[in-house]
Image (cartoon, rainbow, N blue to C red):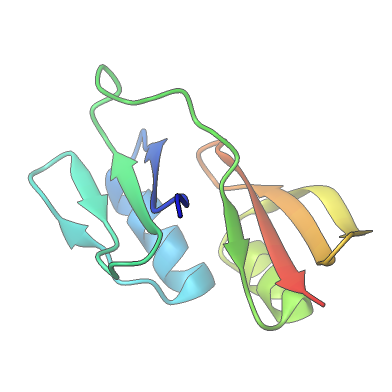
Length: 111
Protein backbone atom coordinates (compact mmCIF):
# COMPACT_ATOMS: atom_id res chain seq x y z
CA UNK A 1 0.00 0.00 0.00
CA UNK A 2 1.39 3.40 -0.94
CA UNK A 3 1.16 6.29 1.52
CA UNK A 4 2.84 9.64 1.95
CA UNK A 5 5.93 9.32 4.12
CA UNK A 6 7.77 12.61 3.67
CA UNK A 7 6.88 16.21 3.07
CA UNK A 8 9.48 18.83 2.25
CA UNK A 9 8.94 22.54 2.80
CA UNK A 10 11.01 25.56 1.86
CA UNK A 11 12.48 27.36 4.88
CA UNK A 12 13.80 30.87 4.29
CA UNK A 13 15.09 30.92 7.90
CA UNK A 14 15.96 27.36 8.90
CA UNK A 15 16.58 28.14 12.60
CA UNK A 16 13.24 29.96 12.94
CA UNK A 17 11.42 27.15 11.11
CA UNK A 18 12.94 24.54 13.41
CA UNK A 19 11.98 26.61 16.46
CA UNK A 20 8.38 26.94 15.25
CA UNK A 21 7.81 23.21 14.69
CA UNK A 22 9.56 22.30 17.92
CA UNK A 23 7.38 24.70 19.92
CA UNK A 24 4.11 24.01 18.12
CA UNK A 25 4.31 20.20 17.89
CA UNK A 26 7.24 19.08 20.04
CA UNK A 27 9.13 17.73 17.02
CA UNK A 28 12.85 17.00 17.11
CA UNK A 29 14.57 17.89 13.85
CA UNK A 30 17.96 16.51 12.87
CA UNK A 31 20.30 18.77 10.93
CA UNK A 32 21.77 17.49 7.70
CA UNK A 33 24.21 20.25 6.80
CA UNK A 34 23.70 24.00 7.16
CA UNK A 35 20.55 24.25 5.01
CA UNK A 36 18.51 21.14 5.80
CA UNK A 37 16.75 19.62 8.80
CA UNK A 38 14.08 16.97 9.15
CA UNK A 39 12.22 14.69 11.49
CA UNK A 40 13.47 11.12 11.48
CA UNK A 41 10.58 9.14 12.93
CA UNK A 42 10.41 6.57 10.17
CA UNK A 43 6.75 7.42 9.69
CA UNK A 44 5.68 10.47 7.67
CA UNK A 45 8.65 12.80 8.06
CA UNK A 46 8.99 16.52 7.39
CA UNK A 47 12.02 18.06 5.73
CA UNK A 48 12.88 21.77 5.87
CA UNK A 49 14.90 22.92 2.88
CA UNK A 50 16.84 26.12 3.62
CA UNK A 51 18.48 26.26 0.19
CA UNK A 52 15.68 27.89 -1.78
CA UNK A 53 17.36 26.98 -5.09
CA UNK A 54 16.70 23.34 -4.08
CA UNK A 55 13.33 23.88 -2.39
CA UNK A 56 10.17 22.36 -3.87
CA UNK A 57 6.88 24.12 -4.41
CA UNK A 58 5.20 23.60 -1.04
CA UNK A 59 2.25 21.17 -0.90
CA UNK A 60 -0.40 21.27 1.82
CA UNK A 61 0.78 18.74 4.37
CA UNK A 62 -1.74 17.55 6.92
CA UNK A 63 -0.70 16.87 10.51
CA UNK A 64 -2.90 14.50 12.55
CA UNK A 65 -3.29 15.31 16.27
CA UNK A 66 -5.29 13.93 19.20
CA UNK A 67 -6.56 17.36 20.38
CA UNK A 68 -7.35 19.82 17.60
CA UNK A 69 -8.20 22.70 19.93
CA UNK A 70 -4.92 22.37 21.85
CA UNK A 71 -3.01 22.19 18.56
CA UNK A 72 -4.61 25.43 17.36
CA UNK A 73 -3.61 27.19 20.58
CA UNK A 74 -0.04 25.88 20.19
CA UNK A 75 0.18 26.97 16.54
CA UNK A 76 -0.92 30.51 17.39
CA UNK A 77 1.41 30.66 20.43
CA UNK A 78 4.34 29.61 18.22
CA UNK A 79 3.65 32.43 15.75
CA UNK A 80 1.40 30.74 13.20
CA UNK A 81 -1.72 32.37 11.75
CA UNK A 82 -5.01 30.62 11.05
CA UNK A 83 -6.03 30.94 7.39
CA UNK A 84 -9.07 28.63 7.51
CA UNK A 85 -10.89 28.16 10.82
CA UNK A 86 -11.82 24.72 12.10
CA UNK A 87 -14.31 22.92 9.91
CA UNK A 88 -15.75 19.42 9.79
CA UNK A 89 -15.09 17.01 6.96
CA UNK A 90 -16.03 13.34 6.56
CA UNK A 91 -13.88 11.60 9.15
CA UNK A 92 -12.89 14.51 11.36
CA UNK A 93 -12.23 18.20 11.80
CA UNK A 94 -9.35 20.39 10.71
CA UNK A 95 -8.00 23.92 10.38
CA UNK A 96 -5.38 25.42 8.10
CA UNK A 97 -2.61 27.80 9.08
CA UNK A 98 0.46 29.54 7.77
CA UNK A 99 3.72 29.16 9.63
CA UNK A 100 5.87 32.27 10.22
CA UNK A 101 7.51 31.75 6.80
CA UNK A 102 4.30 31.56 4.75
CA UNK A 103 3.99 27.77 4.35
CA UNK A 104 0.38 26.62 4.51
CA UNK A 105 -0.41 23.43 6.40
CA UNK A 106 -3.47 21.74 7.87
CA UNK A 107 -4.04 20.10 11.25
CA UNK A 108 -6.72 17.44 11.63
CA UNK A 109 -8.30 15.32 14.32
CA UNK A 110 -10.04 12.12 13.33
CA UNK A 111 -13.55 11.37 14.59
